Length: 240
Image 1 (tube, one colour):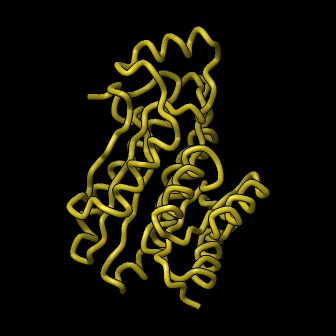
Image 2 (cartoon, rainbow, N blue to C red):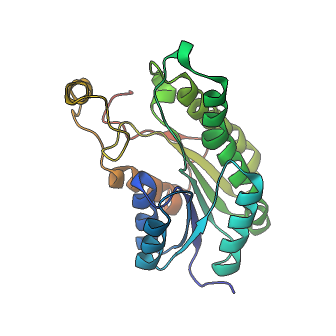
């Protein structure tokens, strides 16, 4: 049965940036479908907190994506907003990086977004409206040592965003990208010294809170009517 509120789907919506986005969109008046692959209880607790639904979705698996989107559509309705936030990250020296590690990174970070968009775009096209927001990374804009596979996956996501924005504009669907800098909820650096040095290299000399990234996502989901094919990068000035 169709709910009265608009519907948003957030992949990886139960932890870190995804959790902050789920909360921000709920506060903005959306019913939120939280897609999770780990920390099931955290996803269910959050869904209860924001009156959303939590659904297991392995974004790298097409059957899982189709089933998860179907469950959300049945419980909440067709999504007007999709936030592709699910992703993995690791640091591996290039010559030590295995083909399996490279393929897995792209399967989750890039192919996963592709599969999610394929699953929700038909209904958006029928409704002649929709917002897709892909979470990339500022590392795709400047590169990062020992993260060739990660930066490749996020760079591809930015390019895919721009191409799809052109293709879907005639249907009233806006496709944008948020490329955050380092976030306090992100993977820990190897040492306090490395973390301190990294923060000192950022003009604002701190990492972002997940809620600050979520504010950018909420803007694109709720306002930003003249934004499509854009990359917004809350990064404290690391990339200018």
